[in-house]
Image 1 (cartoon, rainbow, N blue to C red):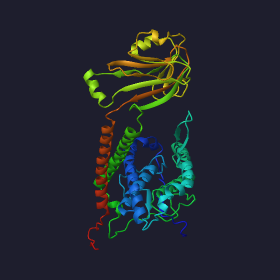
Image 2 (cartoon, rainbow, N blue to C red):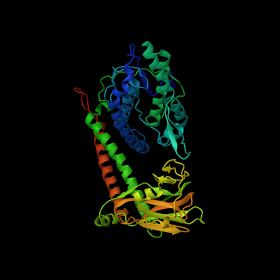
Image 3 (cartoon, helix red, strand yellow):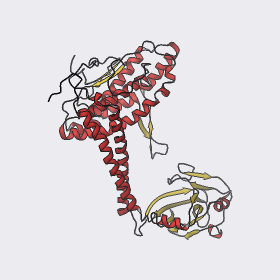
Image 4 (cartoon, helix red, strand yellow):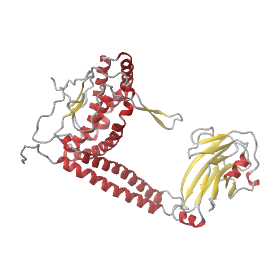
Length: 474
């Protein structure tokens, strides 16, 4: 057999000769324990792959214990996929283990590379694998498209594998047989996907072939049953306790990275994002064809003493608004929610549910448009405001230090319909620096804990343990 055929990733599967007609209808429920565990294991897979990336870059070698763990995660995932809706190829429930199970009808093996290119590790997982990612997207599904408002991307899923497995499920339900051509084609696509996963996961430098190897038997040869080696295989050294430790460490590392990044971002904002008056702000353009733009109900509770404590962190809160047309005077006010609701009852106005804007007040993301045909009087003639400002240019108000349910109202000062303003919410945030250091410090502590939880089991799994009755040498 030529070297071009014997790819170092071997995927094997035996078709169940007598599959159940109806069991596949319940497999989604039976697979829940596996899916929960795999979500955690793939988190660990990602973190350990980063560790392996650094190790390959420095030493040219993939740490054997980490390699055994990551192969085990892929092997476990392949068994679950084969049992579940990635193939529906067997009714034998997948075992909960990283190790190879020779008796199970779906098996995967990846040859350990003694040496890997330090240069390829920088580019193969993204640049060189790009053509394969296109193929995998067709097979396994998953690509982005512009969202409905052309500003976000939506994830689409589904591919040829899902379509053919659905066809096989319907045929199985009707006839009690799994169509062999469908099985062979599904296995060919899954084999392609797993080869690309191993290549992108830095487990081999051998470029995946653009070749559809159909059927359950890999052209590289069957996955051989393990003999009695002098040293225990790497994946067998991953006991349940070690796996749990690595998973916990990986989750801690991910959380720590988020916290550390957030803390660093807060420190940067505290030092670089303040305006001349010391405020940190967010702003957006919001518009409506109605008479006013209001906030959702804002519930403020507590006593003046509570406000004193909040001020040490939040400081002063300022609201600003300016009409996008400089010739139009703008009004901004804060009033009790009940009073605002009564005043605007029957009139057309928009309620800002989140800080989104730019949708013209048409009831799009973040804005609810309340219909109506009643006109409203000029806001300055209504005595409901706890804080207000009106006039040309930018107007600002400071949040009143009072408990209650409040609503912010922005509108044209003459109460004419068609409001378009640039609005800004700002606060001095005197406690931001201490919050930032606390978040950053928490992230670093968790990261240290995650490193320990990962490093200890990896080190122990890397130690060569002899089989019973085998001498330990070297």
